[in-house]
Length: 72
Image 1 (tube, rainbow, N blue to C red):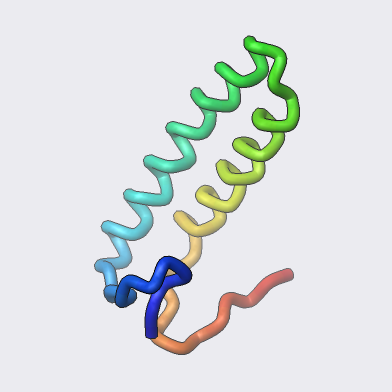
Image 2 (image 1 turned 30 degrees about the horizontal axis):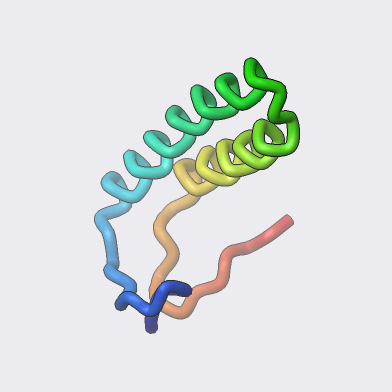
């Protein structure tokens, strides 16, 4: 299986995966703040959506190869 960018997918340790997702969530909070401060509302909105997805991924256990996420 490959990623959308074409690189092979690696099975990451669930703790490392959650840590990476938490880091992305943290960074996007700051980036969204910068976007709002500089009158970039659409960019701020997209960054907020990225933060929400990162927070969701941080909470979900790592998916096994071939398993699809259970979207609500």
